[in-house]
Image (cartoon, rainbow, N blue to C red; front, side):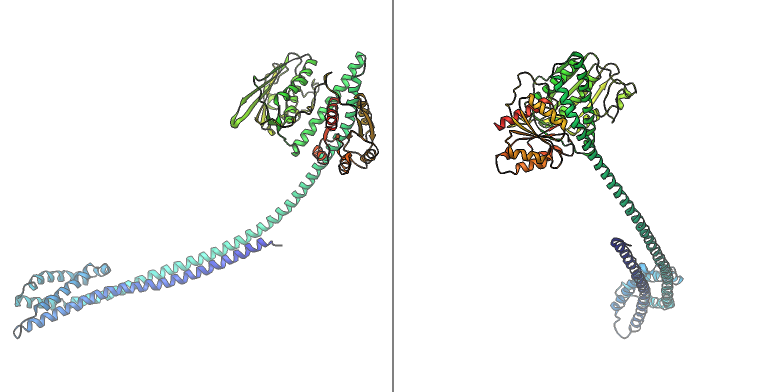
Length: 615
């Protein structure tokens, strides 16, 4: 079935061919008319030759006649020499026209012209002085008249010769025109044949294009189906990762929480060592899970950069405090080199800057057995009032050879990839870090020598900005340092915990009890709403994924109430860190989003913030 565009093409092709054929026919008609016009022009040229010779002959005869009449009337009356002189001058002009006119070129080659013209020239040379005198000699005039009678036949012969020349010219031009017309007709016929061949070729080409287009449409349909399958597979993968994230983080929350509480209880040295090993292993598993989820989010383009005012001194201080304690725990010296002057506030994404620095410092600590790890920060003014930051993370660890450096930022590449490798990891951290660095307008470079350590450099451009009215960094970083003994604690609160997992309910209940709060529990959103109806609560800890009614629906129903209970702060505790879970939670009316596994310090500070706002 031909498409409308193809039918339009064929119609246009047919019309073009028809128009060209008509144009060729018109051109042929014009050429034939031109042929007649050229013939007429040739005749005009011939008429010009015959006219000149005829006028010459006529003036010659008039001159001879006037001269004869004048000579005969000398005895009877006064001769009219002026009339003879005038006739002679007219005769001279006719001779000059015949001699100088370009149209008489063909006539000049005739013997009649070549024989007559010298006699005329001589006659003119002799007659001009004679007729210039007022009273010419009669004998000389008689001689002149005799010579005119003698030249009469030659003049008449020239007229006949001009007629023959004109006839020859016309015949010659007609032959040439006929030859040219025949050639033109052949050319037009050849052009029309070529036109028909071209039209046939275009028609065949159009049909091939129709076949190719049909094949291309079929291929596009197959590709669209394959794309749909790939998108469906990608959605299935994302759903699988989201579900696996939720399913893995939920037990992680209980496991890490219980290990933290176990660490706060009195333990024998060997028990504490076993507990610490279990906690380190769980943290390692959590980091692997985070790397996989980050890579999936980067591949699908779901990681959004959210610049905000940042106090860089405070951000780097948090990183220094946390990573410094990790380095000291391993027996390494941690050196921090700060700039002489810190800018007040800059605009960047603090979460991504922390994530990159945590990853670079964690790698430096992991691959260094002895010596030191250095975090060096430099800040210089850049173009357009921006600030150019350089964060250099150096270590005295195992270093890397050139072959390893060439593959360093490749996915799943590990420095010690052998079966007996000493260091764990997913091989995703550096690729994620460099991708995030480029997303926030920076980059990561590396210098290293095998056995002599490495230096990873994060460069970043940040515009300066004014201090915000509310400090966006009042919340704790993703991995906050341990709280000091002087850290304030919130007053006792009545807290409703909506959580369907029994281990998490046990952990959160124990944690809240140790923090001095009273907890009530609901296994889904519907039960939570029923308890809110029956009892007053200061704060709600709401899981997102629950049976019967999830946390988002429950929060929306709570915010729809008409009494004061609609203002109860709701903190989400969710293992779902994908699929824009935080954005959807905030849109549903949740006040703060904490991802599982929840750390004691994170929860304590969140409770402190919202208890202050509540009271």
